[in-house]
Image (cartoon, rainbow, N blue to C red):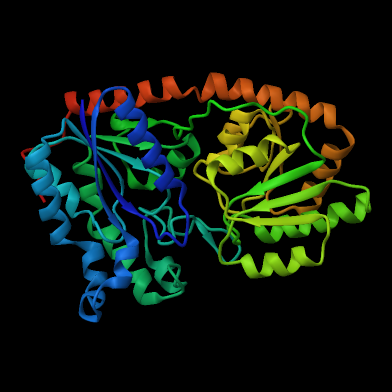
Length: 403
């Protein structure tokens, strides 16, 4: 097939799992012999815009004529069988869907977050899960300045999603949700169920498996409130109070808005090592030498690449029991779940990891089996290609739905 991937890359200062998914799928599809190209824009480019152009960004978020024009040119030149859209915010805008409509090329979209119903994209506000906008009303988001703490920026974001509500419903031939829990939480968009599919993110791995782990657990991810950095710190302190000095070590890999706070906290605790941002091979090596990977997320994660990466290596998860995690991790089989927002429960699990290491070795082996059965890369790509073929056979075009 001739496949065009469309993606607005996130800022380089905020490493994104979505960027990595796009890159991995592009490489894998090309290796299978498909003709794959990428049409992308970078959020980083905004910093280089002149002042007058930056002032137009709110309007461009809603409708960017340059993106539509440039994509139309690419479509005429490449003539793809299908376009796979990943992210259009903020530079591309939904105008790219109209370029596909005009060229009569079917569109598949992967929904990586909750952006179509939630201004911040994570159903998380003021340190807690929030579903105030899940029914479709954007008023609570503007009231609480949910996007970057700005009413104006929030209003622009919700205007983008509200004004294009019919666009997302009527100009997309197939929707890919990255988990069943995400599909449920986005039910307010009223997408056609016959065109909606759940497909987990593609996570390839062909490296070595975990052998004899060190006496440590690992956190890999962004350091912020939504990802659970405060809960991780509280849970670790609670665990150390119980366990004393002869206990596990915690290794943290990542960066983010709470980096300074986590750095200051770790500096006072010899049991904690902060390694900062790491390459993917380094992350896999770190996971392999750990007894478990901790996932304390406070928001309802749509997927969580680290879950499947740990499973691929054969290491169990300690995960908050909401969002996609209960769907991906079976408590007591290939990992352990704890109630969200409960550092005391996380502390008890950490104690169990230390005092019953053999149990977690077995959970890790089962996690590897889960990877092989539920996340096999070959089957995952086959599912993606099936959805592409569905979209080609059941296209939604301009003659059916106008602007």
